[in-house]
Amino acid sequence: MTQHPQKIVALVDGSAHSASVCDHAAWIASRTGAPVELIHVLGRREAADTQDHSGAITLGARTALMEQLAELDAQRARLISQRGRAILEDARAILEKDGVADIATRLRHGDIVEALAEVEADARVILIGKRGAEADGARGHLGSNLERIVRASHRPVLVAPQAFAPISRVLVAFDGGASALKAVHHIASSPLFKGLAIHLVTVGTPTPEGAKALDDARAELTAVGLQAQSAILPGQPETALAKLIEDEHFDLLVMGAYGHSRIRNLIIGSTTTAMIRSCRLPVLLVR
Image (cartoon, rainbow, N blue to C red; front, side):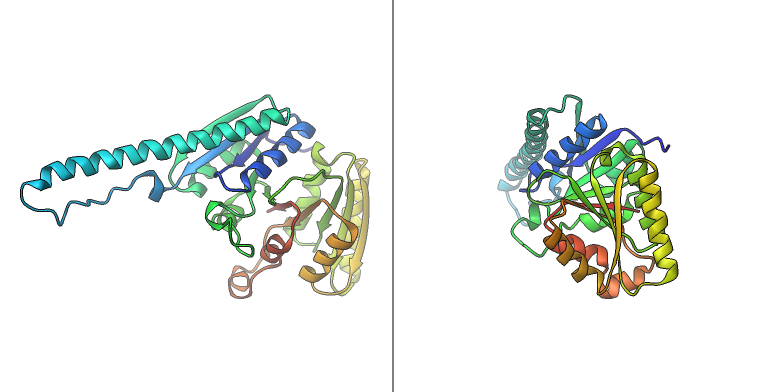
């Protein structure tokens, strides 16, 4: 059986989705026994405002004003760091309330993808909110860092919706591709899915090869004692899966992260992005 890295990495930014990220991290911790590491990243723009505001100032006032501006910049940097630490402490309090004891916090500076690359080797899963602090008010808008993180990460990424709800029914969007097969392997080898009802679904025109791949995937899950069913649905993935989620009240969607054609994804978008945007349930993406 696959040996999973142990750490649950939860990215928190103080947005409305941060509490949900913490609640989902606590749910994973309760089922796996894994510790949680909370990370808040101060972006390069907010970590330091290094503009020289004194260029247009002349005569005797220049030196005094330069000193005041330098002090304001230093004070601003201190406040931003204090805000980051407060976000981490609030997140820790949510996890503790949810019963998690093993919690680490980390305040990082720089690019979020670079910060993640430094810690993901020890991560079993990475959690991020569906929308970040800048996108909280925009219903159809995904967090600006979300797609970058999913594309860059080599670990499963759980995209948390605005609120946590108990999870018992899992829908697996299965297209037979490499990332979908990897998602099935992940489910089969992780204690997270024990006791949950797993439904594997392929959307599109049935083919003998597709039906066999779906049967093999279900057999892999049932072989390790999971409750697994499978079905092939007609239609387009985005609409058929969204309707199924609504009709059957699934609690978690698992899918491969992005298709093979990067050009196609950039031009017309991908099923992955469409599903994350439309779904009100957590989405676990496996590369």
